[in-house]
Length: 112
Length: 112
Image 1: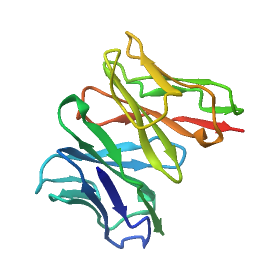
Image 2: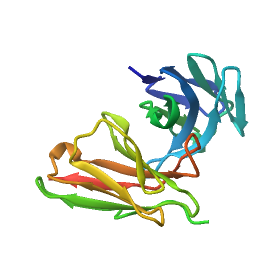
Image 3: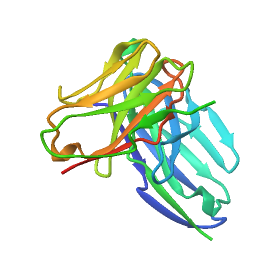
């Protein structure tokens, strides 16, 4: 069964304290892995897409990496405005039958 | 460029009633997908439409249905509402399959 697991469920960091969020997946036919950020009361907002193992993407304080079994979202020197829930999603399956499966998210809280 | 618009923002219904939610995608986007988000289950895929055709369907009962119009606007319908249908319903649009999703702010449905 296709599955996407995110850890930890929640993470509290001090401002400036770097860390990583994990997304591990077990799917048939990975077509792409996506990272989204979701603020309370809003829909998820796209951050990155990764397609193949070894690929990396960066945006401001965030860097996403992908291996054959997992992806990491590294956050460097975070600020309070980085507080949000970070969601990982995997597009799996072949041809038009592919589906997007979301992980349950990591709630990130950055203390000033 | 206007984002994804969902209406209504909030909805309160009673068990047994039916409800219709509306979604207007970003101009030019032909793919619209729907998700149910609850604290316990996270984001669950409902269905995806592309050029008025349902291309994919998640594991939800037949009470959940949807459609897409020629202008790409989409509606989803839930008949015979149950208490467990209380959730945030999110609509997302994309240019094509395997592309990043742009989410609306969602419709918060409460079933009493």
